[in-house]
Length: 128
Image (cartoon, rainbow, N blue to C red; front, side, top):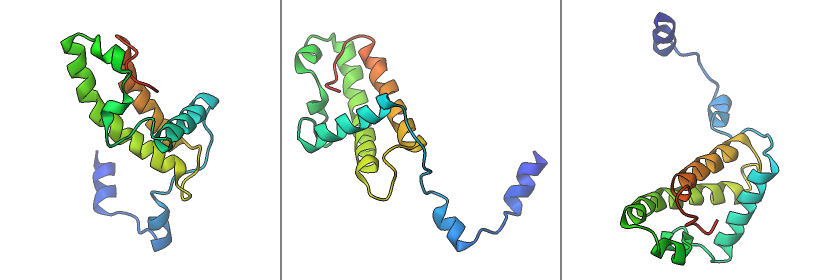
């Protein structure tokens, strides 16, 4: 514990250049499934099939309508977080300042898949 305390009390000096690059996404690659998902979701957003500002557009409406009230409530709660994460994935993927395939984007997609799977273990409620 003292090593951590000492390090925090006496941080190493970082040049201004290193400070600016500290949050920069690193290059890398993703598997084809992640790449395809990022591209497909971005296209759905750009084509207006889904709208991150209107989470109800994410739903397969017939499937959602058939859900039990408990699962509708769980889906409704999840949609707000899904919308936020979709926005981040799309912005990151389309940005000219970030790589189209990198560990950070892959991690965001994995997080979204995990949220979806918690609901879709019960019913395939999302369009993507």
